[in-house]
Image (cartoon, rainbow, N blue to C red):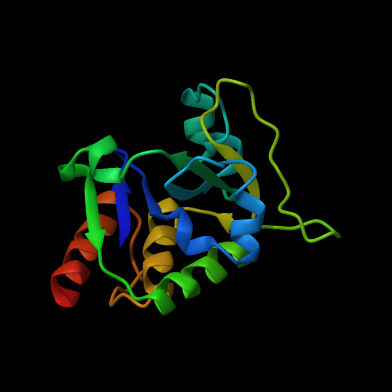
Length: 181
């Protein structure tokens, strides 16, 4: 089971940690989140997303394109328990879909010459681990666009075209969940 989690204006994708076993992504994340049952991935504008306390200057910086970042958070309980059923869309996917999603997420991480994801240095108060993304953020390719693209990579019947807002991402995820149920 895959989950789309809405965090207000932003959505992220959570999948079971065991789905990443035996993958390069799993090997890179396991030491960072050894007790996690689920890993949640999100994309955003690096200078805003990885800021410990983003204010108006960081918010306004989102109007200009810039380097992206991928945030990973380890979850010890299922997303519906942590965020509430109203903030989570459960999406059934196949093992092949989870494998395709793991490849997509791995490909979205910029890596160094040794093949390791490049960490973004953050203040201690920032939740999760941040990594440099291969994609750039802009108003036409937001965190919400990225999350719906991730769902499509997992084999779900969603179209990321035109998705900018979290509400659009959630609506497409709910429609996809209804179609595959």
